[in-house]
Image (tube, rainbow, N blue to C red; front, side):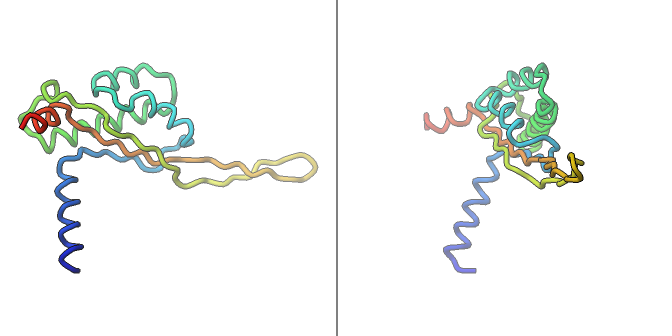
Amino acid sequence: MGARKRLKAEERKEARKNLYIAQLHNCPTSPRKMRLVAGLVRGMDVSMALNVLKHSPQVGAGYLYKLLLSGIANWQAKNEGVRIEESDLYVKTIMVDGARMLKRVRPAPQGRAHRIRKRSNHVTLILDSRKVEIEEEVQ
């Protein structure tokens, strides 16, 4: 590997140390339905997002609730000794991508068959702290 590639790779690695990521793979809901729920919590504070997801009737809200708890746990693993309330965590980005599709057949009239596509999705959640951004701007 050349020096330029190695330096870029090291920069990306350093940048990922400050990101707090949680990922959910092959969630059995359609991406369109999950994007509606993800739009509710995008940019929200973590405590407010947990409250919204807990009381939301959509099926995807339960999956996102657990994913957000996982993201908080990842943040705590990297920041031992720091309280969540003091850090002012928020949902920086949340992305919903399509995943594998299960194809099934449903009987139709006159001996035909219709294809049923059971969709699933991948969700990526990135948390960030507003407190850190303010401190960096001051310095």
